[in-house]
Length: 350
Image 1 (cartoon, rainbow, N blue to C red):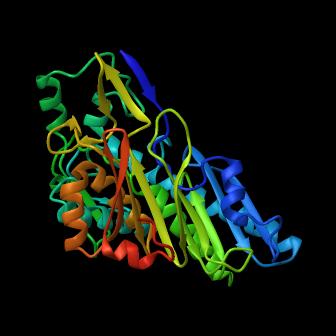
Image 2 (image 1 turned 90 degrees about the vertical axis):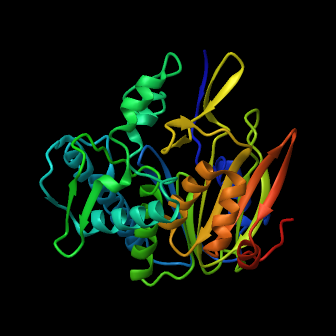
Image 3 (image 1 turned 120 degrees about the vertical axis):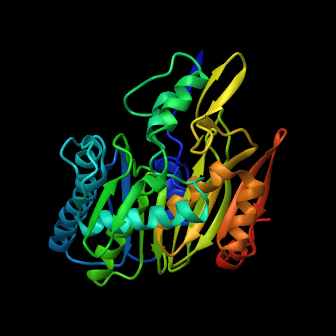
């Protein structure tokens, strides 16, 4: 078996080189001052760019506040932290209700909302099956799981097994083995948290990016709309597929072209259908979603990768969503964009 398991959330800033290209829009130097913050969080990197000038003291303070905000997100939603809220919930195998933070309940509410709209195509309880196929943190597949193994893993999967009491700020399991994984929505939430921090400080021109998910507001250091590059879904080389001009919105992308394994010439995607317990089999290479909330865009991007371009496009149209599907047609890539996506960007891409 040949393995190819690499990061999959790929939009815009492909390398430091491309960060510079997009940020400065090809100019030798920006026309206005800007501040760039960067660091590590959630197993990936983050970049925060703020247009405008402010004191050195404020710069240092803001860096600390950004890191603290992201640390708080990790403390709630990281399955790698043993004492995080989500880890404590996952370890408990009883059916009694557990009190959780407002942030935890807020994220869970949005995840369940999208699960219901997609009729289970998006499901934050799919972790046991993802792990079974070798894409989770605890297990690496040496072979294709058999029917019995898939069926057993699916026994503990299903968003319907989560009972939420919003007023009491409590949730409980209907299935003792239920396991939550917010990896498909937490980075987007982290982006929103940093963006809200910046706005609370009066910043109105910024870009926040975590692991490829981002949110922008106002203008870049040149006084123009932010230029965001969508990566070409190509396993052999990292390159830009399209550049779009955006402002005052969040962007999230998901794809299956870098995270897969191959057996006997057959590729098995990291995107697992929660209803079948198997990797998806379709020609959707990647999907980009625009929304006011990066958290919401993040979750939708995952949902559409499960649904594929046909079902995904129909659902996006029904819900008036701004989505760009990149469909693999033989050796070429076909753009399939919803009207709202076209309306929200400042530059046509088709």
